[in-house]
Amino acid sequence: MRTLEPILAEHPFLEGLDSRQLQFIVGCAMNVRFNAGEHIFREGGSAEHFFFIREGKVAVEISTPERGPIVIETLGPGEVLGWSWLYPPYRWYFDARAIEMTRAIAIDGKCLRGKCEKDHDLGYEILKRFAKVIINRLQAARIQLLDLYGSRP
Image 1 (cartoon, rainbow, N blue to C red):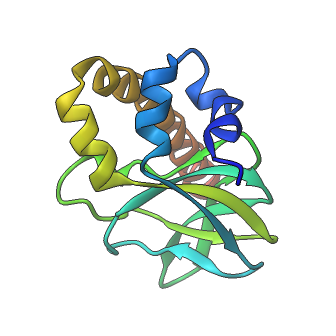
Image 2: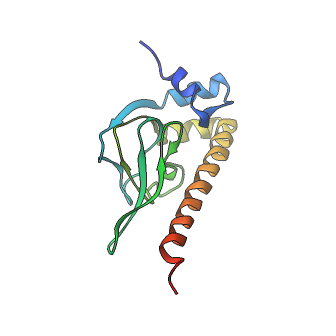
């Protein structure tokens, strides 16, 4: 039986982690699959996992009563989905929907938070890497806001 370690070791987000740190993450991992159109999570829901996308495309969206869902960002293979598992109250701030059949590796957030508490070097590495994800997501939201409201007087 093949473990998820070699797959995770190839993911760009985890590049440079040592084998011990990678093993910690593998211990919290499982394969998941989402069909086209399926919601992976919804705003306000419990943020219990994050995802390393292996194949497919995922839309990160916000819903508005006037316009319906607005795509903030589209993610694909090699990217990371979800950061709300890191910070209380562990609730999603966006919706995520598979645009096409998507395979990913889900990481149990509670499991990894516990391991990061025990290994602060791992915790620091994870936080540094997720800071980039958060900045990119906020920048994508900013660009969408400019597109939506920038042309109004």
